[in-house]
Image 1 (tube, rainbow, N blue to C red):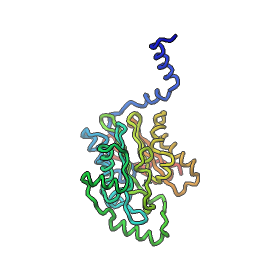
Image 2: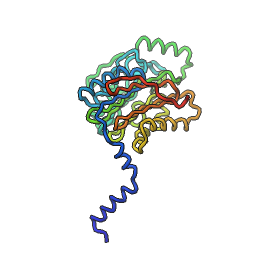
Image 3: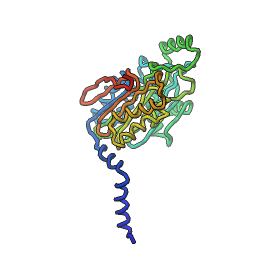
Image 4: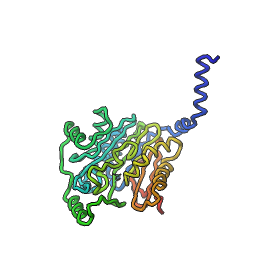
Length: 321
Ligand code: ASP
C-alpha cells in the first residue's frame, strides 16, 4: 500500500510527465527589468512618451498604460479615441475601454458617453467595485459619483464628417479598413511586471448600442503577468469571435514567440473569413522577457515601440503582401 508521502511524490512526478506545458511556461517566465512600451498606430508615439516617463521614474506598468493612453483620449485630432472620436450613426460618441494589471485584476467600461477619459473610469471599476465591467448609463453614473465631469465629446470636425457621411450612407453602419484606430498599449516596468490598456470610440458610424472588442477582457486586451500581454485593433467583431488577445497570450504560454502568436491569431480570422477584403485586424504582444511582436491582416497597421530609450514607429508585417 502506498503511504501518503510516496503517493504525493508519485503525484508530483506524474504531473511533470503529463504537463510539459508548465515546463515551457517556466522557461518563458524570466522577467526582464528593462522597461518596454508598445502601442498601436501613430498616436502611440506621444502616448509612449508619457508612459515611458512613468516607467523611467520607477512607476508601475499600470500607471504607465493609463497615463499613456490618456494622451490620445484627450486629443481632438485623434478621431478614433475619446474626445473628438467619430460618433455612431446617430451622432453619439460612445466609448469603450479596458485595463488590466499584473495581478489579473481587470476593469472596463463600454457604451460610455460624455466622459473624456474612459480608461480612468475603467481603472476605478477595477479598483473600487467588485465588478469587471460597467456599461452605458450605469458607467456614466459611476464616473460622475467619482468626480468625473460630463463633456461634449463631439467636436465640430467629427460632426461635419458624420453629417457628410449621412448624406451618402443610406444610414447603414459602414465598415472599411480606414475608419477605426483604437489605442492599445502594453507595458513592462522595472519590477518586471506587465499591464495593458485599450481605449476607443469604436468603429465610426456603428449602430447605436454597438460595443466592440476593446472593452472585452481577452478580446481587445489581455495581460497575464506570468506569460505576457496582447492587444488588438481593427474590426472588433472578428477579434471577439476569436477571443484574440487571450489567444495570443495562451499561444505564448505554449512557447510561441509574441510574433508567432500574433501571426497565428490573424490566421484564425483568415480561416473563418477567407473573403477578408473589408476586414483589418492588428495585434501587438509582449512577453514577460520583454520580447515584442506585431502582425496585421492588410498592410497599413503600424505600432510604436519604446525600448532602450528610443521610441520608434514600425510598420507591422501583414498577411496580405
Ligand atoms: N477594435 C475597435 C472596435 O471594433 C476598432 C478599432 O480598433 O479602431 O471597436
